[in-house]
Amino acid sequence: MVNLGKEKRRLKRRLQYIQREAISGVGFAVENILSARCLLPSNYFVWEATRPVANCNYCVNITKPTILRNITRKSFNYYAYSSKPIIVKEAISHWRAIKEFTFYTFKRLYEQTVGSYESLDYGCQFLNFKSDLFTLKDVFNMPKARVENEPGQEPWYVGWGNCHPEILSKVRQYYSIPEFLPEDAEFPETENIFFGYEIGAVMHLDYIPRLMWQGQVKGNKTWSVAPVPECEHVCHKFDYYVEPGDIVLLDTRLWYHATTIPKGQFSLTVQSEYG
Image (tube, rainbow, N blue to C red; front, side, top):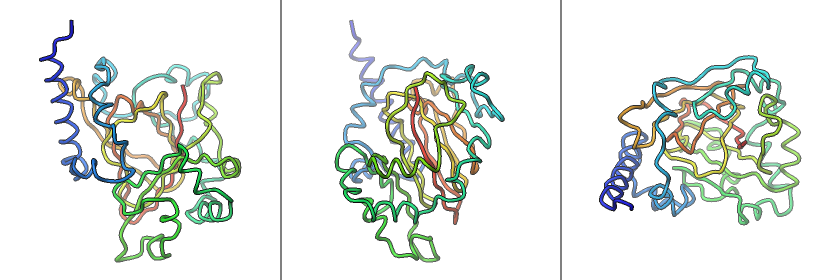
């Protein structure tokens, strides 16, 4: 039989944790989370309240990411489905995207492709994080000074699901699924693009079906991770950073995570899942 009193206390701790992380971790109030369009799904707190209790073994004694270099698919099998934070150094340095992806690459593609913006109305989520940009069209209509984060301009950072078939086909000519991931892994049909300056993502969990990988194409990025609230007493928060050419792998369903970008740097990442 479910102990309702215990469940209420657990839910209260979770909601307090979200509020604390939102305010102290990223300087961001929960009220803003609830009111900001496209920042987080409206049922985020319902998901958090009904999330299964985690087994804290996933984070015990973890205080930094595992760093891998020159990893092969065979060697990566040991780590493939781990929940521990992992950085694979210089894993995508050969991607064309490293040299050729810019803000204007995507601006041209979306402006020249029929129905490009409409694809975001049919299940491909746009995330404006803490910026005042509420659609991808808003992003690509920014004046040049703001696009390039010139002095006096408001920083911006956005992300979206890249699911227009024609655009997806074209951008995939610049990158590929990391070769070290399991050959029999399942991958979604789309990838996500995140780019911008300084702001990054607020502290949150992802409610996705698979593990996450993210390729750092441009700029540096700092990740702040924290265990779920029921594991606070045995696990730790910590920060780490990635550089262009690196891949981050993280079970974002179990680790709260936020990102920040060094002042003045432009960050661009490609992100997807595998499982």
